[in-house]
Image (cartoon, rainbow, N blue to C red; front, top):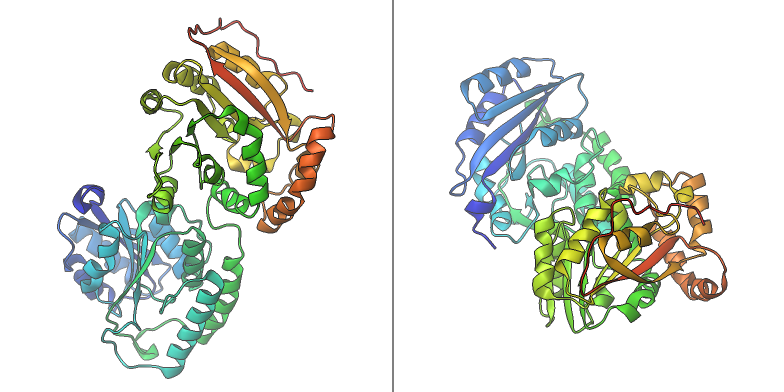
Length: 490
């Protein structure tokens, strides 16, 4: 792993401010001068959330005096969560931390908060007011409510934070930006706790000091926000809007191991001993493919690859590499690996220029290598779910075969997969407009998979997916561009 100074260059300090004219200037001076780890510059992003006092004027003055401060006006007042969402959208740093517009939290704790991230051990760090550091003695019932909410959040999310409601949260900026946040007010805290857990981010917690304010000193959270937090803890634990649709779908697919095994066994006869899998995602198929003698797992998303590296780092014969299928240079690792087969399932439909992918494979894999592709079938089934997943197309009869031949591959076989799935897909997605698979749906589908496998062998219909196996010839020459693309419906 590269040293922190080369990976993280800028810290974005995100400040939501509402009616803080008495404290904003002093707080931002402390934030601006707080020590940071070596090599890390800072920017301070202040969002004035429709303040009714002089907060906006002071924020503008601060921005004119200090170039590292950037200010944004948000009207009318929408709440802390809405202000932080605006700040997240505006940040330009590699790592980010939340900071209130007062001095309840001490910016001198920044190095402690950032260390697990800069060391490459964490994606998110919570600062705990109850983990052994000095703190101001204040409200008993406020503390008990906090502990109750933290316990419920931990129970539902299977975490062990001591202070879910803390303001101090630090993130790898790219991980924070990938979380679709919704809460407008203080529900942002249980929402983040739930969604970082659902995204399986590497979570750390460190002790911080705390100089809490009384209500007569400007504290704004009330018992109503605490009561609302109960609802948000349950809401966001079971919400499917915790990441992009592709990641949510891959997570749901984990609930159907029988289905994943069926998909693998359907293509296994063509894989051989040296297998390269492209677009591995969360590794649902890789769990089976990695059992081959020599395996190369690739994806363009480093978060997926990092997760798989941690999980399978001790396995012999397994390589993990970054491969963006839209980048011709990335395919060169296939030349060195020299696979018996390249397999990618439910991937090609995500790439606009699918012909270029096939050409790149032909140029870099050895003679005799098989290209095994599974893609969704029939544009008649194209739905909002396809669009949400980033599908450019569902393939028609003969379409993928024609593109393989045009790239210089010999088509060995084609067969349909998951025939009964057509009916479930049509009802839920094409007619029902569903935009995400639900875990319970996949659990049910997995339970019924043995029956579906039998039906696949006897039903004389097309399937929800089509599988095409091509073979790289010893000498290839791309077919003329005039080769027609077959798109007739079955």
